[in-house]
Image (cartoon, rainbow, N blue to C red):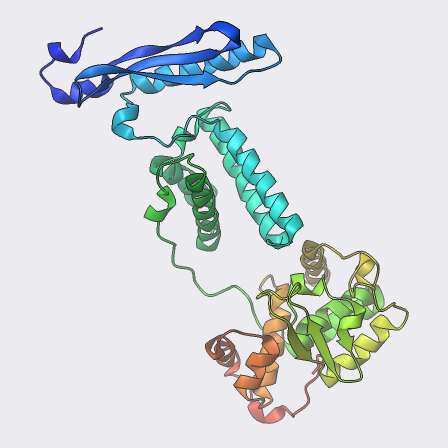
Length: 391
């Protein structure tokens, strides 16, 4: 192989190297050894990495040879650890690291530091990334693959290749930023490549206020087919309780005498204890729902009735899709459309926005005031101080 001294073009030095080889030492110590040109000393510098012990010698040999092959592929392409200054753990297998990340998510879920929905979505993103990386780079690729080019290709696949929305693109980008910070902190990468990407502009959410005729249809249908889920829809409409919060509430959190619901810090999205007033229109649904329940029962369990085990939040959304299809309601009528409708109805009935903000537990009044724009075609005079789901 030519050396730098025989070359006049300095950038040729980047590909000066001695191929990686497996060295089997005494006492079972195996090392992979290779040389790369050091532009400071103008000499080849030796690099070594240990091959972890394995019970099966054949498996260890295969693993070591795969690493050698990968290293030589990088060296042939001009990679130089001196010039690139790679992270200390960059030669870890990317697939193994993602599995480790997923186990980390499970631990945080167990400890209560992450919500079930967050863990579910992040594990879904991680699964898609892992499968694409294995198909594109191989199952034994190093963390070295995780760079800006890697993210460009993956995000292009998500947005253009799979024709997803800007919102989905942004969700993946948020995941990649979180993953990048995880990898950076553990020295698998030397920089966060996700920082180079900007979020895409997202249009208004495709949710519509549920009109009075549709609300009446929903009540009639659910009274006949699923009274447990009827309670879910009214809890969303009147009390503006978030989906995941619903699944954590217990019967004892509903104080009928004082007319308020306690959202404990462990339940609340913002991790603060809060109280929500029970509106008069909701009381009949609540009384009927808990008439045979124990105080320690979850307010929504199997079949959407009170019970000893909480229901998965996703089941609430899945059931709404079934109801919408059964009634041939437009796709823009989503589960959270019921919450939007409840907020809008309160505002249209003359409830001060600041009171609605507190009832909806919005962090800013501006979030509440957005709903006033959705109903400007309505005749405000036909609403009374008390509003009803069916009217």
